Length: 215
Ligand code: SAM
Image (cartoon, rainbow, N blue to C red; front, side, top):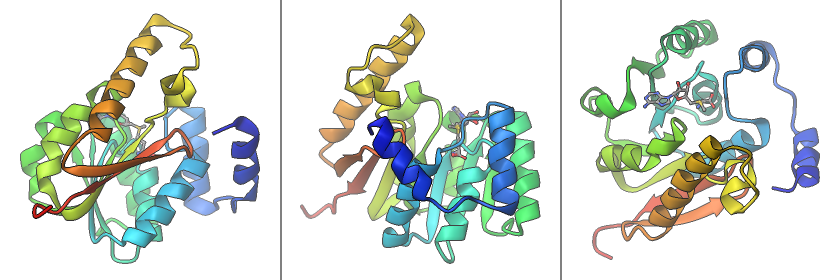
């Protein structure tokens, strides 16, 4: 999204208060990459329309998006995966303080090794992929079988600060990550089992709706 449009939308959002504000400040101070306000606002609006009962999140960080999602969608239960121990512990602390600990189950470990444990909480109405960008396709392929018919997979960062759309990447490392994201986007858009649209909000969110088998 163009900067001036993005800034305008952000200026209209109600500032977060209390625990969420504290988490945003913690994330900024400790350089924890949580979803940014405009992107999460869009994701929450779509989730409210979908009204999932169970959601799997890949990439908890400190639990910010998990808490925003349970606050936005009545009755939603979130299972969320995180491999960084400090973030996992911080997420547990914040979620206990929020009072939503019965609705958010955090599993510690590499998402590529947690499928069996995560499946115990499934099947899921929605999956939200927001972890290592180079692994999105592997996350998708591993967890998609746990998604119900008509379920939705949301993938964050698919425009990756505009680099995916051709903005020059500043380093070779970023260039490599961009290629992985653009490969993922092409694969995802062509996936015969899903109808996918990309929303240019925040860092770019792909919405992939699982087709029914009869089609
Ligand atoms: N969804 C969070 C939010 O908006 O509040 C932000 C998640 S942050 C962008 C990505 C997180 O995924 C990081 O905390 C990182 O440690 C975690 N992560 C990356 N690769 C992972 C993997 N393979 N398994 C589990 N966690 C992973």
